[in-house]
Image (spheres, rainbow, N blue to C red):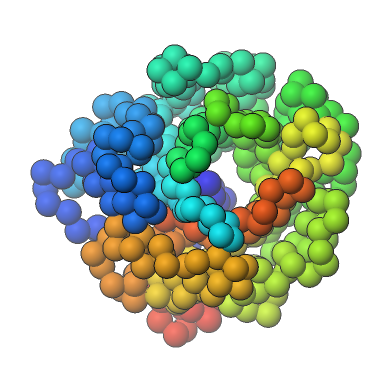
Length: 393
């Protein structure tokens, strides 16, 4: 999912150049064209109206924002992507399996306040649920925690969908634990886990994934699966500021039986450095299911490759390398790049935002590659000096 860190100012990443687009192109046209091509690259036939249709339904949740010309700028300072695009794409790879396409959107991106953003987001989610025939009850169960009368934090609600070749689409909802203030985020997540039946998971999550306190191990997102999932998940995302690859290994051992060193090795491979990440933070995602209500069923490490690479050519090469290392076919990466942009990978950095490794107790490993639409800006590639400032330490 999108993991732009709200605490990292966009200016800290360097100046951005405006994305090139004809004056008449709207946000909806830009995103739909990218989505159609990306679905085709991943092998979804007739992606405009056939098997890819659910993802186009998700784009419709952006409401009036889809008709906004790109030249008018983003409808709000959305934190989905660095250039404030209110949508993000990703590809999910497994060894020997087909590639899944995923889309995340901020339905309330055109709202003027977080409170209105939340209202628009929940209304859009309910409309999608009615159209797709799933229940929003898991969100309703915790709604008062994440949608108080006066909201704080960085966003209200994000909605994502997985398009899979052999299964019905799965919907995911992300909400902000800082909605009642950053100082209460741990309290909010503890109560949300309890209401979802995972209260017993909190002590280990707190002590082992957030041992350095909220300033250094910061809870970013609380997420819920809705719709067509065999085993729905509750997920907690934690940003680890100034973290090492070895420390990420320690967090990954929350997953029973996780091999020593695997998470740290992945961090080093994607980050391109010896092990410490002092710029944009590494992010952990701990997933819980009814199979075990005290221990995570999966752990994901998200590496912000865009802040530890000179340009997207380097980021793309690292994504290809880790896919091969995990026995996955990287052949889709080239067509996926072409689906997203016509620019050369060396001419910017940030279209490939994150690369992540998912380890699960009951599913094969997965590598996810995240793509920004670059609807509004392209971050220039770093010079040798700036690349040295951003690399993993």
